[in-house]
Each structure stands twice: as structure tokens, then as C-alpha cells.
Length: 135
Ligand code: HEC
Image (tube, rainbow, N blue to C red; front, side):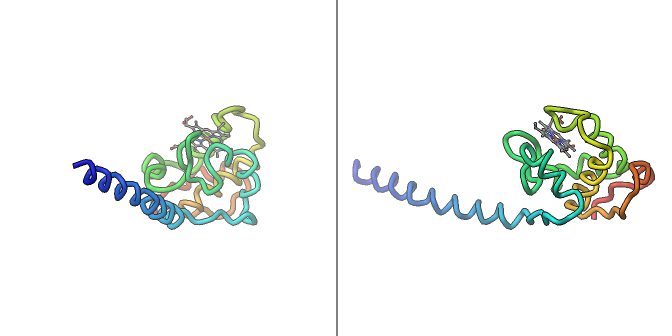
């Protein structure tokens, strides 16, 4: 009886690393890298990545800024609303500290990382009539 038990425990342990590898591979597949040269990427890296993750996938500190969970909260809203949310509440540890131009660039980066169309904008009011449409 004892032997059987041990064998079950050992085979369960042998599975653990395999499961780790599978989920790591899935994680990589789900997130595409952020092009550091993309407009807004430098500002995102400086002000947002520490909490929301380098690829916008979130982690312990803050929720993801991409993917279905994020998009389901924003679909149908004006792009300006996302801008306003960011400029008035983020970074969470220092809200209101960012320049409007930087927030505009970051907002459009977040949209593009979710495959939402957003043409270059000169100011936040350009986002007034643009909707967040799930591609
Ligand atoms: C100090 C950590 C921290 C930093 C830095 C930070 N955030 Fe956040 N963010 C949070 C937390 C925590 C939440 C969830 C609580 C809340 O909604 O306020 C959040 C929520 C959000 C949301 C709402 C998410 C949703 O599902 O609707 C957006 C959008 C957002 N952050 C964007 C940004 C952007 C863009 C930056 C960079 C300018 C940034 N955040 C920087 C911690 C942070």
C-alpha cells in the first residue's frame, strides 16, 4: 500500500514541471511583444509598465490593459473616455501627474495593442467621436 502511494506522489510531482512549461508557452503565445519604437511605447514603459506589465497583460499589481476582459469593459465607449480615465486616475500611485500629450500617446498605444483602429490624433478632442470597437 505504501509503495503504491509513493508511486502516485512521484508521478504527480513529475507532472508539475510539464504543466509549468505548457502554461508558460500559452502565456507567450497570448501576448505579443510591445514594439519599443511604437508611438507611446516609451511613455507606457516609463509610467504604466511597472504595474500593468511590459506587454499590457497585467500582473499582481494591476489588471491587464488588453484582451477580452479589458475590452469588454470598454467596447462601445468613446476613445476619449479611456483617455479621461487614464489622465484622471493613472498612474494609480500619482494620478494627474502626466502631460496630456503623453496620455494621448499612451491611450492610442493601448487601443492599438487591442487592435482598435485609431488614426493619429493631434489632441484628445480628436478622440471625442471615435468609438472603441472590438475588431
Ligand atoms: C502603481 C500602479 C499602477 C500604475 C503605475 C498604473 N496603473 Fe493603471 N491601474 C492600477 C490598478 C491597481 C488598477 C485597478 C484599480 C482601478 O481601476 O483604479 C488600474 C486600472 C487601470 C485601468 C482600468 C482598467 C480596466 O479594465 O478598465 C486603466 C485603463 C489603466 N489602469 C491604465 C493605466 C495607464 C495607461 C497607466 C500609465 C499611465 C497606468 N494605468 C499606470 C495600477 C496602476
